[in-house]
Structures are given as C-alpha cells and as structure tokens.
Image 1 (cartoon, helix red, strand yellow):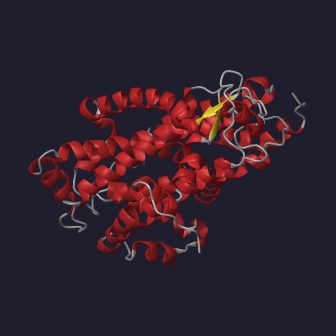
Image 2 (cartoon, helix red, strand yellow):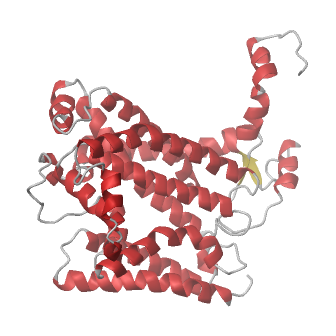
Image 3 (cartoon, one colour):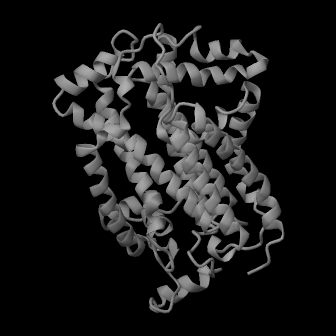
Length: 404
C-alpha cells in the first residue's frame, strides 16, 4: 500500500490519493509543444470546445425531444422552437455546431496531410483521428434522423439501402438495421440510442486515445524539424526559454490557442444568431412522409463529396467506389512512401497531389448538392474518377521522392 502522510492542505490530501500534480505535469506543464507552429495547430482544441457545445446543447434539447414517430417532428419544431424559453437558441447552437465541427475536422485533417503529421512514429495519431472522423460522421447521421422531417426520413432510407450491397441483395441486413421494412419507430428508437448514448461515449474514448497518441511522438511542426524534446525541455526547465525550441502546453501554448478559440467563437455565434439556416435543410421542415419522395435527395454538405463518388456509376461499381472513399484516408500513412516529414510545399509532386486532392473534394462537394443531370453529371463523374486516380498515383509519386 502507498505511504500516506498527514495532509497539509486539501490539495496535498488530493495529491496523495489522485496524483494531481503528476497528472498536471503530464497533461499541461511538462507536455511540450514546438514553438514553430501556427494557428492551424489550435484546431484540436477548437474541436474539443465544439464537441462540448454539442454535448451541452444536446442535453437541453433532450429534455424536451420525444423519440416517437408521431411526436418527434412537433417536439422539435413546435415545443422546442416555440414553447420552450430559448429552445430556439439551443437548437441553433446544436445545428450550427454539428455542421461547423466538420469544417474544423476537414481543416484539421488536411493540415495533418500538408505537414506530414501521419508519418513514421505518428501513425496512431492519424488512425485515432480517422476513427474520430468516422464516429463523428455516424453521430451526425444518427442526429440527422431525429427531427423526423422529410429529408431525415428519405436520407435514412437511401443510406440504409447501401447496406443491401447492390447485386448481393442483402435486404435482410437493411431490415435488421432499420428494425422494419422501412424507417419507422424501431429505426428512430435505435438511432436515438446511438446518438445520445453509444456514439458520444465512443467519441469521448477516442478523444482520450487521440491525446494519448500525441504523448510519445509529440505534435509535428510547420518546418518538419526533428526536435529532441527531452533535450529542449531540459533547456526550458533550466531557464533558457528563449533558446529552447519547445514550450509548455499549459499555459504557454494554451494562451495562444485561446486567442484563436476566441476568434472562432465570434464566428460561431455570428452563425448561430444570423446565418443558422445553412445548417437546417428547408425540406426537413416538412413532416416525414413515406408516400411522398422529395424531388432531390442529398445528405448534409460534409457528406456530399463521398455521396458524389457513389452517384455517377452503376450500383455495384458505385458501392465499391463509395467504400474505397471511406477507407482510403485511413491507409494514408502506408500509401505515402516518402521518407520526408516536411511541408508539402517542399515535396515536389506531392504538393501538386495535395492541392489537386483538396480542389477535387471541393468540386465533388459542389456537384453532390446538384441534380445528377447534364454537365453536372459529367463533372461529377470526372471528379470521382480523379479522386480514385489520385489515390492510385500517391504511392508511385512518393516512392521516388528524394530525401529533403
């Protein structure tokens, strides 16, 4: 048994039992961050704060939401929006945060790709981050079902139909997921459980894994410099703060982070009060009707790029292309064969590949919102083929990349 002495203060009493000083060192005062980084490294903290906003607003909405196919729509659009004081505010916060969180995720993800933050030694950082992206996507999809409007119902119908496997005709699997032949009460109850319990718990666990994965290799820096964190931290602790290439996470780096967070929150609440409409599809303000199909069914903007990869092809090929798009980013640490962990701007062909991939995903997103006809259909097909081609080319162009 550990040795306990008479405590001199409440802090000392807690420290002997919870090792709070050690935890504080591990998480903040002796968690070292490179100095040569920019505001893009604050995206992780911004994601955490946005997740907290989602949790808090979700709890308030949960107090009045009714997970029943007969009352769900009215509990959201009438009870919460009209009868509950400031219910509209919590719904706007939740809706905007659910959309903006994906903008931050994509910025965070492409920052990692640009600076090579997935390279040797940092694979677990990338993998845990991609697992978070997948889980957030599942959380967003399950939440989109809950208002039980027209687009909720029909998006649920289309997405769950993907599990039939095209020519495999695995309709039994689709019915098992829905709990019925079509989206109904069992479907809503299951996705309600996923959204408010199972998936948030998974996200919390993965956030812990993501932070833990940062401990050993530490975060990357914008120059791709290999830093001896042990030596540089000793300099810092010895008083040579100027000469050291690192700084404490708390409160040195955190103070810089909070400035970026402050700017972000101004932008966030501007959207909440003045431009919340972008996060709420007009079609979803009509109650779900299984006998009336919307003229054009599409997911939220953050899924449009992968949806557009599915659309231009026949059913089976489209499903294979869609599956390819869902897993390929996870494999990035092994597809990039270059020995360099430096910014894309110093990596020759990889820089062209990076900007081509980013532009292509923007085009896919734009096309995914438009009807698949005429020139839009052609552009979508070219963009989908370009996406697949770029990933096939990646191992080839990086294999012959010279050491910088």
